[in-house]
Length: 354
Image (cartoon, rainbow, N blue to C red; front, side, top):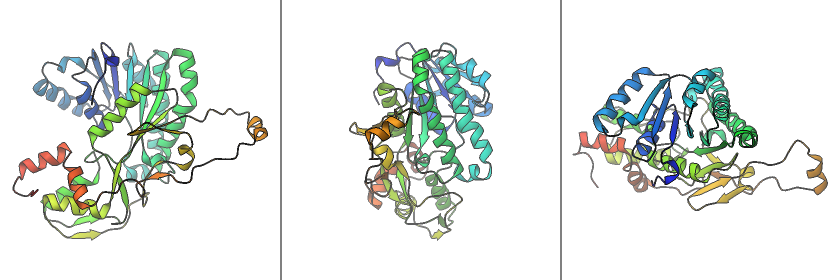
């Protein structure tokens, strides 16, 4: 990923910066021209671990990172970290589907109210650009996590134009599919089951999921910062595979074991959607990415009826069923791009055969 002069001498805030995604963003931006990177999260143990890791592995840049204990649910703590900042990447979220199904109001407080707090604090401090992290589960949502992330997107879009008019703050969103080997994802589970010589547990072998590595996801963030417009939504074109092929690919790398079909979990879909049919009408193909313009209509619907606007959706959504589908060998090649899999193989180098 190329970090441009856009960030030189500027201050970046990362909410949820101790999570798998936020920490990868930090790693990529650490050696850029940013003068300061601020991490806000509520987990002091993870912050302490990250501080010591940075001092050990990146001593030249460790002092660039400042840590703030806080929660996006608390507007005052978000205001504190925003003071003097130029850019914000909002990664803090509750994002495990089953947890949000059992505790939906907790998801509301973090994914919706927390997003609104970030916007309020950013506008008050005249932050230049804020990029919000969203998920494919926000498109046609059927579970609490997806629903709250979808409303979070709507909050960004609803406030985007006024935020720009009032303080010059540009609000934009990124929406991504499954990030391989991130917290709570299935590949580390499969690997641990193989290591323990237990059967791999598969929800539905025909279920499809997008596959992105963390570096690709960070590339999307950087692209969004570079091309942000008020209320825009950025999506990266992504590979996908069936869960059955994903399991076979992991076993091809780490060794064979039995497969056990356990059925879908609370709130899971057969396939994921990154862009709805309605959004596809407003999408611009930018090569590796789509940029979706916000719906610019006002509450004055009469003029649209008079003009006779009829088309409301494209023929097809962009889903994990109709994107580039990887076979087992393609899955192996894809998962080998992740640091997690490489590190696991370094511990057991005799298992992998190219």
